[in-house]
Length: 260
Image 1: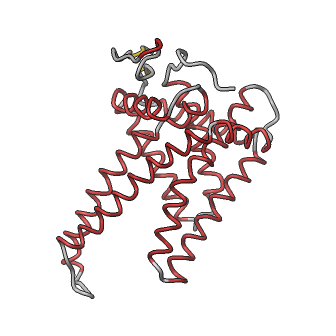
Image 2 (image 1 turned 45 degrees about the vertical axis):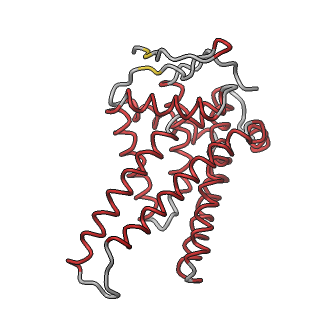
């Protein structure tokens, strides 16, 4: 396993981006095994965080089908995108406690969230901007590809194809930005910009492994949807724990001091 060291640097002796290791394509499956180990050892906080995600999912669904107000649904989704990093940080803290041989405790996890709250919010704001631009792009599709009130299936294909293409672009951006940035923010004394650039760099330098990781995430989300969000109780924490181990294997952030 080799380390790619970009040549850019910033003042005070810290590089602009943390170097990344070269991963083999099977790396994501190692992360899942390690994540499952953490889940078994920390089942109580896992259920707490997982249940929170499920309840939020049901809330958004209820707003969509009961209230019939797209404004409220949009507000709920944007709020979820903004707060999702907080849930993720809490789960990373659980993995940190497991690695340290400690009994995972919610109070310690919440203390970790408070420690990196400002940087997590900056990252959440970044995701929110991407989400808003994404939503705006989808609305523009309906302007350039208008449909009748009850379009035939054949007439919907151009609209659906355009929506999938736009969605794929923004999903790829979101994936690259968020793959390793939040774990780095939680693990090291660094800023959100450095963490985001580090994440994008690592994804671009490990395309095959990260494509496999993206496939794992998509499959897990689809399973969650297929079970009416119920398996999100396990799937979301498992992905978070696996992401933490993926960060530890991929990113060499030793130049930055440990977050305490």
